[in-house]
Length: 243
Image (cartoon, rainbow, N blue to C red; front, side, top):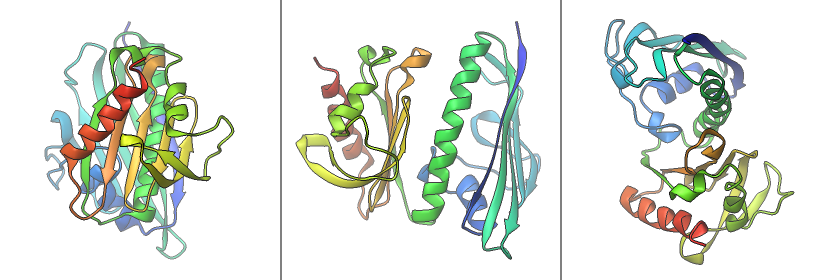
């Protein structure tokens, strides 16, 4: 039975509104995935959407009435950005709404939990990497990683103990058995975020929603290689579940 949904969040970040606006409209590869917007009301947005509000750097709304897959028939995303502290910081309200046509509880749960991780990653990007060129890669682990309990193996493979908390500086284990320094900037049973001096490395435990573990690498290092990152990290991820 089709049913409307709404996922709303408010947050503050210590950067000017223009930096948040740029992150959403032209820098999305640094925290989500690369997207393009035709800069006007009525213009084209990502995934066949239409821009219904274009008011930089205060308001952006995009709407899709033909989402293109059977579990959803309407999708709208709205960002409202207001200055705080004489324009030195920003308050943001994010609203994702629409209609799920099937498996409503599972679809809503996935959207709700992913929203927190994505918006946290946006704040990490605008705080530490805004405006830097980025190379983006995303991929999935093997089918066995879709088990609801599989994601715990990712933390163990990274060398994280069960009590390693958000904000901790860690020596993580990456591709080729090489260690690297990072901040554990996000962690819960479904997601892990690592921030290095030159990258945001994100892990998505999607077994709860019947999908394999996913990864994205947002690499800001000079000469970064998307294919090299994918080859290295996908090999690492496949190795986590090879047994």
